[in-house]
Image (cartoon, rainbow over all chains, first blue to last red):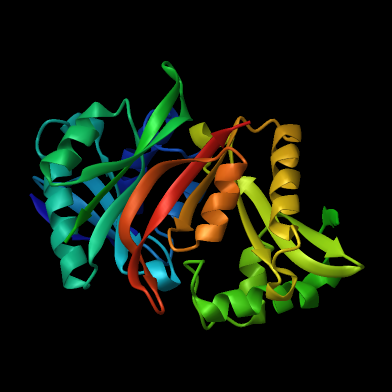
Length: 160
Length: 160
Protein backbone atom coordinates (compact mmCIF):
# COMPACT_ATOMS: atom_id res chain seq x y z
CA UNK A 1 0.00 0.00 0.00
CA UNK A 2 1.33 3.37 -1.07
CA UNK A 3 -0.18 6.59 0.27
CA UNK A 4 0.90 9.63 -1.72
CA UNK A 5 -0.29 13.19 -2.40
CA UNK A 6 -3.10 13.41 -4.93
CA UNK A 7 -2.51 15.21 -8.23
CA UNK A 8 -4.89 16.67 -10.76
CA UNK A 9 -4.38 13.49 -12.80
CA UNK A 10 -6.11 11.55 -10.03
CA UNK A 11 -9.40 13.36 -10.61
CA UNK A 12 -11.07 10.52 -12.49
CA UNK A 13 -9.92 7.96 -9.95
CA UNK A 14 -11.13 10.17 -7.10
CA UNK A 15 -14.54 10.54 -8.67
CA UNK A 16 -14.84 6.76 -9.12
CA UNK A 17 -14.38 6.47 -5.33
CA UNK A 18 -16.41 9.50 -4.25
CA UNK A 19 -19.46 9.09 -6.50
CA UNK A 20 -20.80 5.84 -4.99
CA UNK A 21 -20.24 7.18 -1.47
CA UNK A 22 -22.26 10.30 -2.28
CA UNK A 23 -25.00 8.36 -4.06
CA UNK A 24 -25.36 5.95 -1.13
CA UNK A 25 -25.78 8.88 1.29
CA UNK A 26 -25.06 6.69 4.28
CA UNK A 27 -21.85 8.09 5.71
CA UNK A 28 -21.33 11.73 4.66
CA UNK A 29 -23.57 14.76 5.17
CA UNK A 30 -23.08 15.86 1.58
CA UNK A 31 -25.59 16.24 -1.26
CA UNK A 32 -26.32 12.85 -2.80
CA UNK A 33 -26.83 14.41 -6.22
CA UNK A 34 -23.53 16.25 -6.55
CA UNK A 35 -21.80 15.92 -9.92
CA UNK A 36 -18.11 15.36 -10.45
CA UNK A 37 -17.23 19.06 -10.55
CA UNK A 38 -18.98 19.92 -7.27
CA UNK A 39 -17.65 16.84 -5.51
CA UNK A 40 -14.05 17.43 -6.57
CA UNK A 41 -14.30 21.14 -5.78
CA UNK A 42 -15.22 20.11 -2.24
CA UNK A 43 -12.75 17.24 -1.85
CA UNK A 44 -9.84 19.13 -3.45
CA UNK A 45 -10.64 22.51 -1.87
CA UNK A 46 -7.62 24.81 -1.49
CA UNK A 47 -7.59 24.32 2.29
CA UNK A 48 -7.47 20.52 1.92
CA UNK A 49 -4.28 18.53 1.54
CA UNK A 50 -5.41 15.47 -0.42
CA UNK A 51 -3.82 12.01 -0.50
CA UNK A 52 -4.60 8.78 -2.34
CA UNK A 53 -3.94 5.18 -1.40
CA UNK A 54 -2.66 2.87 -4.13
CA UNK A 55 -2.85 -0.91 -4.16
CA UNK A 56 -1.25 -2.79 -7.06
CA UNK A 57 -1.00 0.51 -8.95
CA UNK A 58 -4.69 1.36 -8.62
CA UNK A 59 -6.11 4.21 -6.53
CA UNK A 60 -8.34 2.52 -3.96
CA UNK A 61 -8.80 5.26 -1.37
CA UNK A 62 -8.43 8.96 -0.66
CA UNK A 63 -8.36 11.28 2.31
CA UNK A 64 -7.87 14.94 2.98
CA UNK A 65 -6.49 16.75 6.00
CA UNK A 66 -7.19 20.33 7.01
CA UNK A 67 -7.22 22.51 10.10
CA UNK A 68 -10.53 21.79 11.81
CA UNK A 69 -11.04 25.43 12.78
CA UNK A 70 -9.33 28.73 12.07
CA UNK A 71 -7.83 31.19 14.54
CA UNK A 72 -7.65 29.75 18.04
CA UNK A 73 -8.77 26.32 16.78
CA UNK A 74 -6.14 25.84 14.09
CA UNK A 75 -3.97 23.46 16.12
CA UNK A 76 -6.50 20.63 15.66
CA UNK A 77 -6.53 18.62 12.43
CA UNK A 78 -9.57 17.21 10.69
CA UNK A 79 -9.65 14.45 8.07
CA UNK A 80 -12.15 12.71 5.84
CA UNK A 81 -11.54 9.32 4.24
CA UNK A 82 -13.20 7.33 1.47
CA UNK A 83 -12.35 3.82 0.32
CA UNK A 84 -13.29 2.16 -2.94
CA UNK A 85 -16.03 -0.33 -2.02
CA UNK A 86 -14.27 -2.95 -4.20
CA UNK A 87 -11.22 -2.71 -1.94
CA UNK A 88 -13.06 -3.04 1.37
CA UNK A 89 -11.37 -5.29 3.91
CA UNK A 90 -7.87 -4.83 2.53
CA UNK A 91 -6.71 -2.32 5.15
CA UNK A 92 -7.05 0.75 2.96
CA UNK A 93 -8.80 2.92 5.57
CA UNK A 94 -6.39 1.72 8.23
CA UNK A 95 -3.38 2.63 6.10
CA UNK A 96 -4.82 6.06 5.34
CA UNK A 97 -5.65 6.76 8.98
CA UNK A 98 -2.14 5.80 10.07
CA UNK A 99 -0.70 7.99 7.34
CA UNK A 100 -2.92 10.91 8.31
CA UNK A 101 -1.89 10.73 11.96
CA UNK A 102 1.79 10.75 11.00
CA UNK A 103 1.21 13.57 8.57
CA UNK A 104 -0.75 15.60 11.13
CA UNK A 105 2.15 15.24 13.58
CA UNK A 106 4.60 16.35 10.90
CA UNK A 107 2.50 19.48 10.42
CA UNK A 108 2.59 20.09 14.20
CA UNK A 109 -1.10 19.57 14.80
CA UNK A 110 -1.76 18.82 18.48
CA UNK A 111 -4.88 16.70 18.01
CA UNK A 112 -7.21 15.28 15.40
CA UNK A 113 -10.98 15.47 15.42
CA UNK A 114 -13.77 13.99 13.31
CA UNK A 115 -16.83 16.21 13.57
CA UNK A 116 -19.56 14.05 12.11
CA UNK A 117 -19.13 10.27 12.23
CA UNK A 118 -22.52 8.73 11.41
CA UNK A 119 -23.19 6.37 14.31
CA UNK A 120 -24.47 3.57 12.07
CA UNK A 121 -21.10 3.55 10.30
CA UNK A 122 -19.90 1.04 12.89
CA UNK A 123 -16.95 -0.15 10.87
CA UNK A 124 -15.52 3.38 10.85
CA UNK A 125 -16.30 3.99 14.53
CA UNK A 126 -14.46 0.81 15.51
CA UNK A 127 -11.53 1.65 13.27
CA UNK A 128 -11.12 5.15 14.73
CA UNK A 129 -11.42 3.71 18.24
CA UNK A 130 -8.67 1.22 17.43
CA UNK A 131 -6.50 4.22 16.56
CA UNK A 132 -7.17 5.81 19.94
CA UNK A 133 -9.99 8.15 19.04
CA UNK A 134 -12.55 8.69 21.80
CA UNK A 135 -16.20 9.56 21.35
CA UNK A 136 -16.46 13.00 22.95
CA UNK A 137 -19.89 13.96 21.67
CA UNK A 138 -23.04 12.30 20.44
CA UNK A 139 -25.42 14.44 18.38
CA UNK A 140 -28.94 13.04 18.49
CA UNK A 141 -30.78 12.37 15.22
CA UNK A 142 -28.68 14.84 13.26
CA UNK A 143 -28.29 12.58 10.21
CA UNK A 144 -31.08 11.34 8.00
CA UNK A 145 -29.96 7.92 6.84
CA UNK A 146 -31.61 6.65 3.66
CA UNK A 147 -32.71 3.36 5.25
CA UNK A 148 -32.36 3.82 9.03
CA UNK A 149 -34.05 7.23 9.23
CA UNK A 150 -32.76 9.80 11.72
CA UNK A 151 -29.61 8.51 13.38
CA UNK A 152 -26.99 10.00 15.69
CA UNK A 153 -23.58 11.27 14.70
CA UNK A 154 -20.45 11.26 16.83
CA UNK A 155 -17.63 13.67 17.51
CA UNK A 156 -14.37 11.71 17.83
CA UNK A 157 -11.04 13.09 19.01
CA UNK A 158 -7.52 12.11 19.93
CA UNK A 159 -4.39 13.98 20.84
CA UNK A 160 -1.26 13.47 18.72
CA UNK B 1 -35.65 45.60 20.33
CA UNK B 2 -36.16 45.01 16.62
CA UNK B 3 -34.58 42.01 14.90
CA UNK B 4 -34.66 42.31 11.11
CA UNK B 5 -32.84 40.91 8.06
CA UNK B 6 -29.47 42.55 7.42
CA UNK B 7 -28.94 44.52 4.22
CA UNK B 8 -25.80 45.59 2.40
CA UNK B 9 -26.26 49.00 4.05
CA UNK B 10 -25.57 47.36 7.41
CA UNK B 11 -22.01 46.46 6.43
CA UNK B 12 -20.35 49.26 8.41
CA UNK B 13 -22.48 48.55 11.47
CA UNK B 14 -21.71 44.83 11.21
CA UNK B 15 -18.00 45.47 11.02
CA UNK B 16 -18.16 47.71 14.12
CA UNK B 17 -19.60 44.73 15.99
CA UNK B 18 -17.49 41.97 14.43
CA UNK B 19 -14.07 43.64 14.52
CA UNK B 20 -13.65 43.81 18.33
CA UNK B 21 -14.88 40.21 18.66
CA UNK B 22 -12.28 39.04 16.13
CA UNK B 23 -9.48 41.12 17.67
CA UNK B 24 -10.24 39.80 21.17
CA UNK B 25 -10.03 36.21 19.89
CA UNK B 26 -11.80 34.88 22.96
CA UNK B 27 -15.03 33.41 21.60
CA UNK B 28 -14.72 32.56 17.91
CA UNK B 29 -12.26 30.27 16.13
CA UNK B 30 -11.65 32.83 13.41
CA UNK B 31 -8.48 34.67 12.40
CA UNK B 32 -7.89 37.58 14.77
CA UNK B 33 -6.31 39.63 11.98
CA UNK B 34 -9.11 39.46 9.42
CA UNK B 35 -9.97 42.74 7.70
CA UNK B 36 -13.43 44.03 7.00
CA UNK B 37 -13.73 42.37 3.60
CA UNK B 38 -12.75 38.90 4.83
CA UNK B 39 -14.93 39.16 7.92
CA UNK B 40 -18.00 40.27 6.02
CA UNK B 41 -17.41 37.69 3.29
CA UNK B 42 -17.58 35.09 6.05
CA UNK B 43 -20.47 36.56 8.04
CA UNK B 44 -22.57 37.38 4.96
CA UNK B 45 -21.70 34.21 3.03
CA UNK B 46 -24.35 33.17 0.47
CA UNK B 47 -25.41 30.22 2.63
CA UNK B 48 -25.97 32.47 5.67
CA UNK B 49 -29.22 34.28 6.36
CA UNK B 50 -28.11 37.31 8.35
CA UNK B 51 -30.11 39.37 10.84
CA UNK B 52 -29.38 42.46 12.93
CA UNK B 53 -30.77 43.58 16.27
CA UNK B 54 -31.63 47.26 16.64
CA UNK B 55 -31.99 49.19 19.87
CA UNK B 56 -33.06 52.85 19.73
CA UNK B 57 -32.35 52.81 16.00
CA UNK B 58 -28.77 51.54 16.35
CA UNK B 59 -27.52 48.12 15.25
CA UNK B 60 -26.30 46.45 18.44
CA UNK B 61 -26.12 42.80 17.45
CA UNK B 62 -26.11 40.38 14.55
CA UNK B 63 -26.59 36.70 13.94
CA UNK B 64 -26.69 34.33 11.01
CA UNK B 65 -28.51 31.07 10.52
CA UNK B 66 -27.58 28.28 8.10
CA UNK B 67 -28.01 24.55 7.69
CA UNK B 68 -25.39 22.97 9.94
CA UNK B 69 -24.61 20.24 7.42
CA UNK B 70 -25.57 19.40 3.86
CA UNK B 71 -27.28 16.29 2.53
CA UNK B 72 -28.55 14.08 5.33
CA UNK B 73 -27.65 16.71 7.94
CA UNK B 74 -29.55 19.65 6.42
CA UNK B 75 -32.49 19.43 8.85
CA UNK B 76 -30.38 20.88 11.68
CA UNK B 77 -29.82 24.63 11.90
CA UNK B 78 -26.69 26.38 13.06
CA UNK B 79 -26.35 30.00 14.22
CA UNK B 80 -23.66 32.41 15.30
CA UNK B 81 -24.32 35.57 17.29
CA UNK B 82 -22.33 38.69 18.10
CA UNK B 83 -23.38 41.57 20.34
CA UNK B 84 -21.89 45.04 20.48
CA UNK B 85 -19.87 45.13 23.70
CA UNK B 86 -21.36 48.54 24.48
CA UNK B 87 -24.85 46.97 24.56
CA UNK B 88 -23.99 44.07 26.85
CA UNK B 89 -26.56 43.30 29.53
CA UNK B 90 -29.49 44.74 27.61
CA UNK B 91 -30.91 41.43 26.38
CA UNK B 92 -29.56 41.67 22.84
CA UNK B 93 -28.23 38.11 22.65
CA UNK B 94 -31.38 36.79 24.31
CA UNK B 95 -33.59 38.59 21.79
CA UNK B 96 -31.51 37.28 18.88
CA UNK B 97 -31.53 33.70 20.18
CA UNK B 98 -35.32 33.78 20.62
CA UNK B 99 -35.67 35.20 17.11
CA UNK B 100 -33.37 32.58 15.64
CA UNK B 101 -35.31 29.72 17.22
CA UNK B 102 -38.58 31.07 15.83
CA UNK B 103 -36.99 31.62 12.46
CA UNK B 104 -35.49 28.12 12.41
CA UNK B 105 -38.93 26.65 13.12
CA UNK B 106 -40.41 28.73 10.31
CA UNK B 107 -37.82 27.24 7.97
CA UNK B 108 -38.79 23.74 9.17
CA UNK B 109 -35.48 22.94 10.82
CA UNK B 110 -35.90 20.11 13.32
CA UNK B 111 -33.10 21.11 15.70
CA UNK B 112 -30.43 23.71 16.28
CA UNK B 113 -26.79 23.04 17.08
CA UNK B 114 -23.81 25.17 18.07
CA UNK B 115 -20.63 23.37 17.08
CA UNK B 116 -17.97 25.31 18.93
CA UNK B 117 -18.95 27.20 22.09
CA UNK B 118 -15.74 28.16 23.88
CA UNK B 119 -16.18 26.81 27.40
CA UNK B 120 -14.79 29.93 29.07
CA UNK B 121 -17.57 31.95 27.42
CA UNK B 122 -19.74 31.18 30.43
CA UNK B 123 -22.23 33.94 29.78
CA UNK B 124 -23.07 32.38 26.41
CA UNK B 125 -23.18 28.83 27.78
CA UNK B 126 -25.65 29.88 30.49
CA UNK B 127 -27.76 31.79 27.99
CA UNK B 128 -28.01 28.84 25.59
CA UNK B 129 -28.82 26.54 28.49
CA UNK B 130 -31.62 28.90 29.56
CA UNK B 131 -33.02 28.42 26.05
CA UNK B 132 -33.00 24.65 26.44
CA UNK B 133 -29.72 23.82 24.73
CA UNK B 134 -27.91 20.82 26.19
CA UNK B 135 -24.17 20.22 26.18
CA UNK B 136 -23.82 17.08 24.03
CA UNK B 137 -20.08 17.19 23.49
CA UNK B 138 -16.99 18.58 25.16
CA UNK B 139 -13.88 18.92 22.98
CA UNK B 140 -10.75 19.02 25.11
CA UNK B 141 -8.27 21.87 24.64
CA UNK B 142 -9.41 22.59 21.10
CA UNK B 143 -9.34 26.38 21.51
CA UNK B 144 -6.29 28.48 22.25
CA UNK B 145 -7.59 31.36 24.34
CA UNK B 146 -5.39 34.48 24.35
CA UNK B 147 -5.20 34.62 28.16
CA UNK B 148 -6.44 31.23 29.44
CA UNK B 149 -4.38 29.08 27.05
CA UNK B 150 -5.85 25.86 25.72
CA UNK B 151 -9.49 25.56 26.78
CA UNK B 152 -12.36 23.23 25.91
CA UNK B 153 -15.17 23.93 23.51
CA UNK B 154 -18.71 22.58 23.72
CA UNK B 155 -21.23 21.19 21.27
CA UNK B 156 -24.71 22.39 22.26
CA UNK B 157 -27.99 21.19 20.78
CA UNK B 158 -31.73 21.40 21.19
CA UNK B 159 -34.69 20.16 19.20
CA UNK B 160 -37.20 22.68 17.88
